[in-house]
Length: 298
Length: 263
Image 1 (cartoon, rainbow over the protein chains, first blue to last red):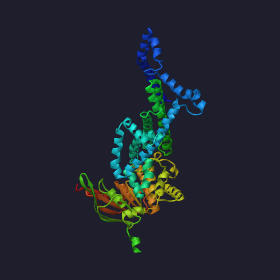
Image 2 (cartoon, one colour):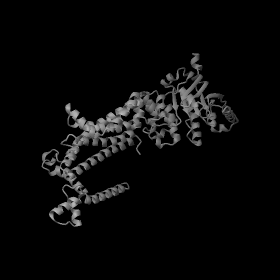
Image 3 (tube, each protein chain N blue to C red):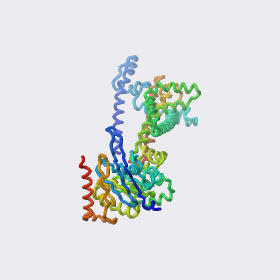
Image 4 (tube, chains in turn green, cyan):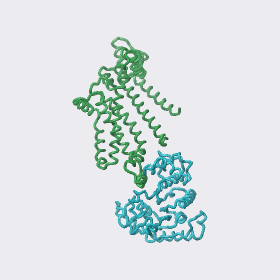
C-alpha cells in the first residue's frame, strides 16, 4: 500500500499537467472557429471547447481514455464488425491491431532471446567469437531501426516472405542485443574460485555450463529479457510503418497521422504502452517465481 | 608390494614455479622438496606470498610447476585430479546460492555420476559428519559463516577422496568459531583417516592440528623448516597450554622469523 501512493501522486500530477497543456495547445483552433462564426468565446467556453474537439492538436486525457474504451470494448461488443456480431475481432478495434503487433512481437522476442543466448554462449566459450561478435552486435544497434526496417521488409518481400515473419525479424534485430550483453555478463559471473572448484571435480565443459554458469546467469537473463521484450514491441511497431501495413498498432499510428486522427494515434500509443508494460510485468512475475524457487528471491 | 605400503601420498622434488607478471617474474616456489605420508595432517604456514597456497594448488593441478617433479598417489597431479583423488576446501565457502545445503553437497556427486540413491545416502552421511544434518534443506544465506564453511567441508568429503586439501578454510572466521571448527576437524580426521594438507597463517592453529608443520618464507617462496609434531593424535583444546605445545609454537615462530631476516 505504501508503494502505491507515490505512483498515484505522480500519475495525478502528470494528468493535471496534461490538462493544463491541452488548453493553450487547442485554443488557436477554438478561437479561429469563433472568429469565423463572428462570436466571442468566454474563458469557460474556451476551456470546454479545447477539451471536446474531434481532431485536437493535443487530446485531453479523458478523450484518449474514451477512444481507448470505444475502440476496444465498445467496438467488439456492439460494432457491426465486432466480436459479438461476427465471431471474429473487428479490424477497427485495438484488440485486433494489438494482437497483430503482439504476435510479431512474441515471435521476434522468442527468436531474439534464443539468438542472444546462443551468441552469448558462443562468446563465453569461444575465443574467436569473443573477439569478433561483440563489435558487430554493437554496430548493428547503432544503425537507426527506421533506416533498416524498410530494407529488410523489401528484401524479404522480394523473396516471397511476407506477413508476420518480416516484422518478427525486425523485432529480433532489436531484442537480441540486450540478451547478448546481459548473458555474456551473466555467464561470466562465476568467480575464479567457483571455476577452480569445478576443475577439482574434473567437471566437463557442459557440466560447468549447466551447473554453474547457467544458474549464475539467471538474474542477468531476466533483466535483459525485460529490456528485450519492450524493444521487440518497438521493433514490431516500427516494422508496420514503412510498408503501409493495414493491421497492427503501427498501422493505426500511420493511418491516424494520414487522416489527422490524433485521438486514434494517442489511443494506439497508449495501447502500445499498456501492452509493453504488461509484457514487462509478466516477465517480472516469471522472474520472481523462478528466482524464489532457486532460493535467490529477495 | 612394499612400494604401495610405504610410498608417500604426495611427493615433491625440487619444485619451482615462476609466475610471469607485468612487474617481471615472481618466484612463487623455489626448490620445494617434501613428502607427505598417508594419514598425515600437514600444515603449511608462512606470511603472504610464501607460496603455501601455490603449493597446495600445484598438488591440486590448479597451477603448473615450472620445473621439478611432483606425484600425488604416485600419479601426476593431473591424473590424480581426474581420478578424483582429493577434495579441495577454499578460503570462502563458495556455496551456490541457488542450491540448498544438501544440494551443494550433492554437486560433486552429480558431476561424478553417482546414482540418485547413492547421492542421498552420501549427503546424509557427510552432513552428519559436520553436524549439519538439520540444515539440509536450508539455503546458504540462512546459515552462519562457520556453518557454511562446514558445509563446504562436507562437500569436499562427499566423494571418496583420500586427500583433503584446505586453503585457509577458517581464515575469515572469528577465534571462537575457529577453535570449535579446529576441534571438529581433528575429530573428523581421526574418524576418516584422510591425509590433510592445510594452509594457515595462524601459529596456534597449525600446531594444534598438525602432525607435520611446514614453515615457509617468501621471495622466493621456499620451505625453511619442517617440524614433526611430538603431540599425540588425541588433542583436547587444553593441550595448547602444555609445554610441548608452547615449544613447537616457539620453533614455528623462530622459523618464520628466520625467513624474514633477509628482507
